[in-house]
Image 1 (cartoon, one colour):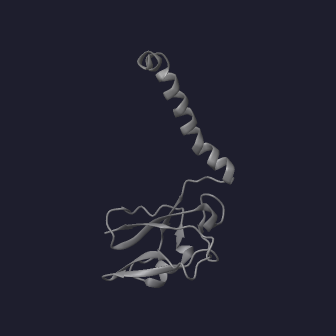
Image 2 (cartoon, rainbow, N blue to C red):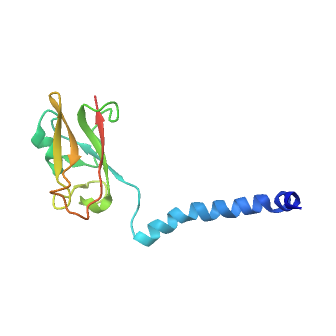
Image 3 (cartoon, rainbow, N blue to C red):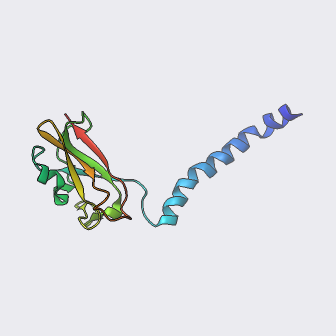
Length: 132
């Protein structure tokens, strides 16, 4: 009896569950009023300068034509929440009143990390994408 029920209605139950599952993400974005996708920012400074890596204005949406993600030795890009940026979409940079960066030495190069003690407590995490 259960087998017959599943044979007749199993695909409809599965389809309904899929529709509800996929629409949950769209509902979350509508609820928060913003896109939940992170924004990729690219580094436009010297990876051998700790002050450049810490400078929020050098992290922008404009691509830097580097091979980001190829290692963990030098600053290249990062993903950040749109609420932690300043400017208009396409030309945004990190908002210095929300995010403060550390520059961590890796040999003679530097990679970024979020200074949680100095950043706004409501700011979101960042995800560095470094290079060789």
